[in-house]
Length: 180
Image (cartoon, rainbow, N blue to C red; front, side):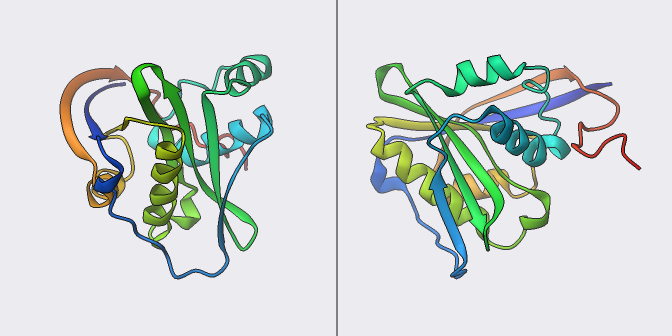
């Protein structure tokens, strides 16, 4: 199916722009997944992004995942609520001091609980800790309803907007698709 998609590109040029938000949950932990684990990263990608039509990496082989993850430029930060994975942020250090938030989001059962602001705060702090001169991210009209607002609330500013037409599957690639 053909869909018009608006993509917003946002950036933070100084760590002082970050407007932190921390949750009041004592059982929320955010830790780096230091050991490259394609199985876990694919689980996060599919579980967080399925309903938002994240399709790009679904066809990746385990070896391709490992090759991608096993680079010093990549960091994956995972939020756990009461020991359960709740969401993640994936960072990539790029040339000229740019750090991109490549993927970011929450698993469906954790949306709307105030965890996204906390996870984004920590993810951005980690991007600056990687030596960033600029932290950037893009989100689009297919993403969750709070995504753009969360980026703006944390201090990101819009620097570009693009409208494209994308070919999407009829049904979002839910990780439970096809199961009874």
